[in-house]
Image 1 (cartoon, protein in one colour):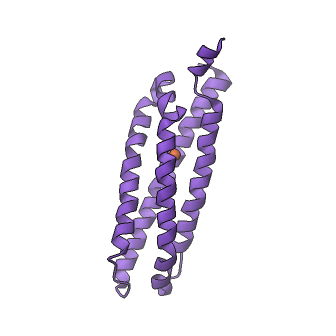
Image 2 (image 1 turned 90 degrees about the vertical axis):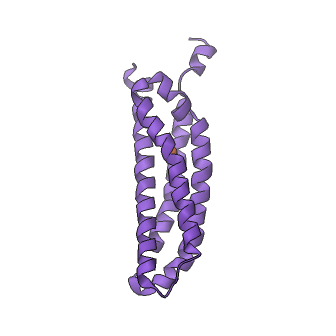
Image 3 (image 1 turned 60 degrees about the vertical axis):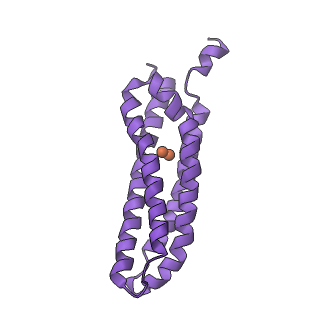
Length: 157
Ligand SMILES: [Fe+2]
Ligand SMILES: [Fe+2]
């Protein structure tokens, strides 16, 4: 096989770096979750710690999604393994959706009345739902990465 042919295959290092980035994203997700787990009596306090962590998570995701869309997972894998194409298209469309939801939560946080516990609880639930979507999204991508990897380097195609 010559170099040109080798370049048409998804690069293992690129797929591996996505798994590494996902581990990094999950570190930011875990920090957000740690704030959400605070006792209800301290709801006003978790907001103060949550917001910078939520903003950090949103910033990390923004650059992660941009890099990911240029990586072999979204550029080469759908061509090489068409059975993943629809799933990857749906996952790619979730990037903007997830970023919009994160930005919306950050924006809404400014208008929250911290004395109204039900507003804080609703906000907390919104962040939990966002975090669940991020975990599910990245887990689905990991599944595709690992399947593509095994097809490419394990059992062949
Ligand atoms: Fe993604
Ligand atoms: Fe990802």
